[in-house]
Image (cartoon, rainbow, N blue to C red; front, side):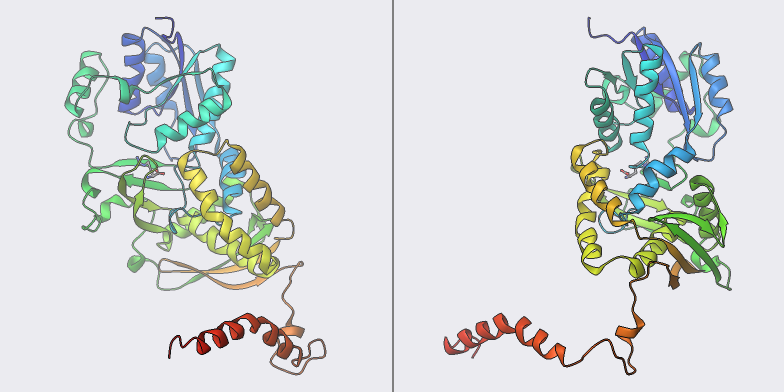
Length: 408
Ligand code: ARG
């Protein structure tokens, strides 16, 4: 087959599933495999992944720490828009996929590979996100999606194949996995199996990086987050790199039980699914970013951002990070952030991140105008004409309806 890939860059976690995929690419497709493992802050050692790849005969292995790039170029730009999908999901998985895909394509170029491969199943959003990104960045690239191609019908078949190929199967992976997890510096997401009945509360053992709000400290903790042009730059006066800042917020949020979410969402592919999310640092950041915008953003700009946000969130959720429409929206969002600098004080307490104060050198808040005391800048009589004209069409309408006998 002319189409058979010869050299494939695999997004490899080092776990059982991607190890099986690696072997399958070598054995069934007869391809040479290049392995790419990214540290996105999933909190796992990456050296064992490298060793496993070596053991599986892989010659070209890329293990890269992408945490700073991930937070600086993906997470922070998304937070400038106060982005949430379907009102609540902070998109922790969706925002990581474009970066992994971009790097896979770059590595394909570096190594002369003609194909890329991911380990996402045929039912989810991630396959779409990976593949739209691959094709947006390289229209000729070949894509291998083993979950949609191989014959294994069950987990048992998969384990049998692993054993037959000499891949070590850890004892706890022999049975059905209790649920599927995806983690990075922004969130941990858990789906499937024990969580599949949306009527039943998720068991506590599902949560991996936050305490139960009821078990969080009884004393609140107050922190100050500094912003420059829409991005957080410091905590309590200490300047921090993007990844270290988010790491710090994750520790604080986790300790105070902040950022847990149980969501039944609509997948792009058409079905509904139930997920448990933990986004401790991101949840604090979302609140704080809104706080700094409250004092620095013009009302018209702020309301337009809020209108654009659901569309922007859907583009990221559906895998259109590398698309002209996402870039157009990003340009508008970024332009709005020029004056979004200053400090926000946030109180962390039993699952909540509440804004309790904000200051900015670019403040639009005018005490002179809003004060209940006497002022010299504002004439209250002007409000007469404002209301008179604003009500004009409502009065004309009411007059017409009254004479037509409506509502009587
Ligand atoms: N439903 C989430 C999304 O589409 C998370 C998907 C991956 N999570 C997982 N546990 N496999 O962004």
